[in-house]
Length: 160
Picture 1 (cartoon, rainbow, N blue to C red):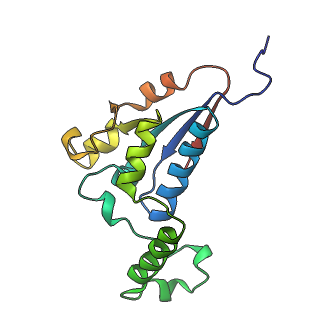
Picture 2 (picture 1 turned 135 degrees about the vertical axis):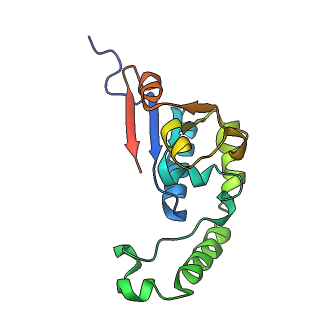
């Protein structure tokens, strides 16, 4: 018998993209879960690893090519300087609303109990070592390990 009445007990967020807008979407969702008393875990895979890579996390960009929300022709988005300008503009807007930087946000997430996991396959593929990653990550795990952590009623999984 289902005793949780559809209540969300745990959010499992998979981040596969390393663009500023996707990283912040995942961080805000994980943080929001914790603020609601919901457990949250994040699995960083493929380019999502850039959000926890010490040398890359401060240099994330907004995607301007192939992003329909930019409302500009793809060719224009690919011109030199356009991505840097869009990234700079977004960072300024985020500062206005006191949005923390990526590293500070990671500290907030780990302090609130969000568990961070790096994907073993992607780490091996990009030749990353655990030492290259933000210190707050729990471990480098396989997809199977992540699924085991997702077990239980009331777990929701998001792929970003």
